[in-house]
Image 1 (cartoon, rainbow, N blue to C red):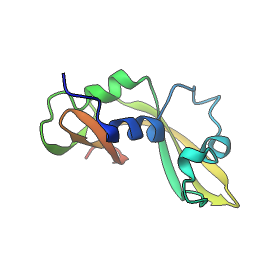
Image 2 (tube, rainbow, N blue to C red; image 1 turned 45 degrees about the horizontal axis):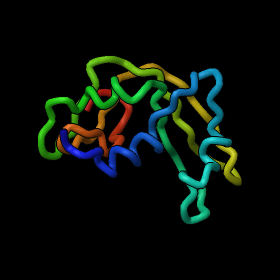
Image 3 (tube, rainbow, N blue to C red; image 1 turned 135 degrees about the horizontal axis):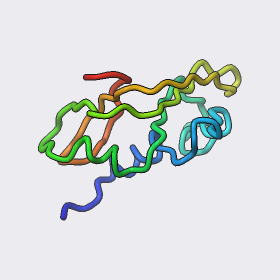
Image 4 (tube, rainbow, N blue to C red; image 1 turned 135 degrees about the vertical axis):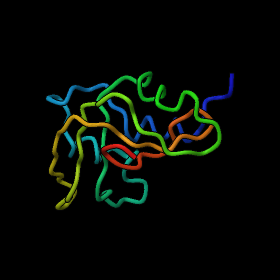
Length: 114
């Protein structure tokens, strides 16, 4: 079994949350040091409300580096437009497009099909 990809580890931290849509707070999450490595508020970030399994499944037969669409829709929260690091948040349920590298999700491309 291939070693867990470092980029996948980062992807999980940046884009997957076990919190429900109702409980999720963009401002507190985005002010976590994981999101502010240089002290700057990240302008936008999308979170997938899921455990890691269904997200990793999108990349199951993706060798090399390739963008893939999910076959199922996920509940999503997008945090954006920080004013002094206070974020607005919007929720939707949609497909996602992610970059896979050797069967691991490594980059969130966009909401919707690729």
